[in-house]
Image (cartoon, rainbow, N blue to C red; front, side, top):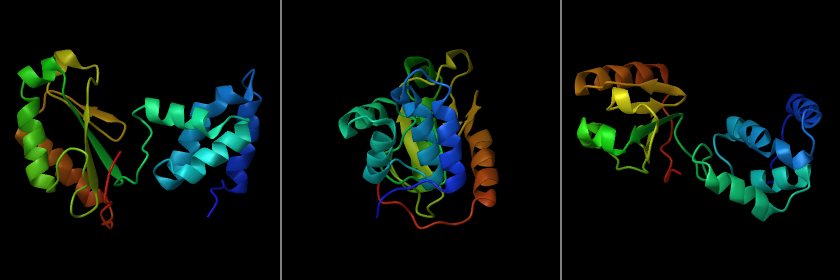
Length: 170
């Protein structure tokens, strides 16, 4: 089925296009709208953006695959990024990652058995002075301990409706 935005979102796109010198300059904001609607950027959403902005699908796919903020496969409602740079690694990121893998029952790139969390690795989340850290959805959690991490996961899990687990993340 072809991807579409609801009429109220289409009005936002029309307004968005007036803010940029060319249509293609609105590619990233439009991709964000598509991802907010369905949780990831499907091939149909790529086709939609390409047509709407008069771009080729390969140009849009190039943007989607370049930026890690766009998911090319379904993900859980909560996405955890574990920082894996040297600063985090030296201060315990490996233990944070291993603990999350055990607790969620999945490896990096996977989704928890309850479908509430997708676990991903990031090369740098730019909080080196406060390592180890994770990004959970749009929020940073720094200077983590296993105990603090468990509390965060418990709080977020309690607020998240159970979902069917996604097969892959990305």
